[in-house]
Amino acid sequence: MGKVRIVTDSTSDIPEEVKKRLGISVVPLKVLFGEETFLDAVTITSEQFYEKLAQSSVLPTTSQPSPNEFSEVYERLIAEDADSPIISIHLSAALSGTYQSAVIAHSMLEQEADITIIDSKSASYGFGLRVVRAAEMAQAGESKERIIEEIERLERSTNLYFLVDTLEYLQKGGRIGKASALIGSILNIKPILSLDKDGVVLAVDKVRGSKKAMARIIELLKQTYGDEPVGMTMAYSFSKDTAEDLCELLKAQFNVQEMNWTTVGAVIGTHTGPGTSAVFMYRM
Image 1 (cartoon, rainbow, N blue to C red):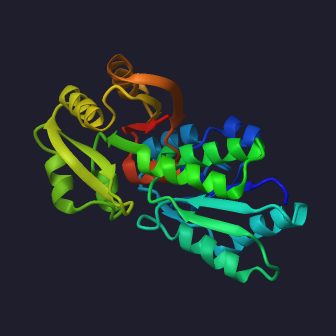
Image 2: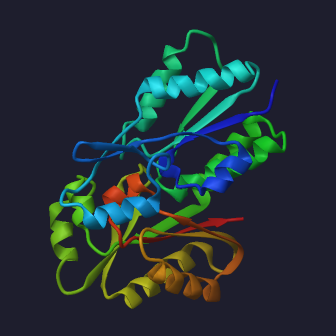
C-alpha cells in the first residue's frame, strides 16, 4: 500500500506554500463577478478578490466544483499510484454542494479505489487544519486509519469564532437570517458567529463593540480549554488589524503551543465580507 494522498477544496484556506510543501491536491470552487468567473486561489488570490470586491458594483456569487472536476483529480492520483488510499476532506455539506460533488465523483470512477470522503461540517481553516495535519501524517507514512482518527479528534477538539463588519454578505448569500442582519446593522452590535455541530452558521452571542466581542470570545474559549495546551490559527480577510488585536489578547490568556496565520479566501470571503476576523483553537 502506498502513502495516503490528501485532497481538499479551496475553501480550506490553506496557505499556498503549505499546500505545495505537503503535496495537497486542491479542487477549486468558483467566484463569479457578473459574467466573470474565477477559480478560487488559482486565477484569483484573496488579495485580488478583496480589491475587486471594493471596486465592484455587483456582489459576487460562488459555485461548487462539478463531479467531473473531482473525478479528474481522483483519476490522476490513482494513475500515479493505484495502491495509495485517498482521503478527501471538504467544506460543510450544510453550506455547499461541494461534498456531494466529491461523493458523486467517487461513484463515477470506473476502477475500484480506496477513497474516503469526509464532510468536515466546518469551513475555512476550521477544516483546513485537519487537512494540513492529515497531509503531515501522510508524508510521515501513517496509515489511513490513524490519519482518520486524528481528523476526528481535531473535529471534536476545535472551536472557531469569527467576527464580521457587516452581516450583509451572509444574509444575501442565504447563510443567516434577515433578522440577524438587521440587528447587526444597528447600535454597533457585533455578532459573535460560529458553526454548529452540523456546519451551519450560528450566532453565538451579540455584544456592543469589538472590544466586548473579543472579551466574550476569550470567555467562551476559556470555558472549553482553560489552561490546556492549545494550538491556534488566526484568519482575516482584508485588514489584519482586528485579528492581530484578538491574537494578542488570546496569547496572553491561553497556553498557546502552536500559532499560525492564514487569510480568508475568495469563496468564504464572498459570504462573510471584507471585515472578517476569525480564531480557530484546538487541543494539542
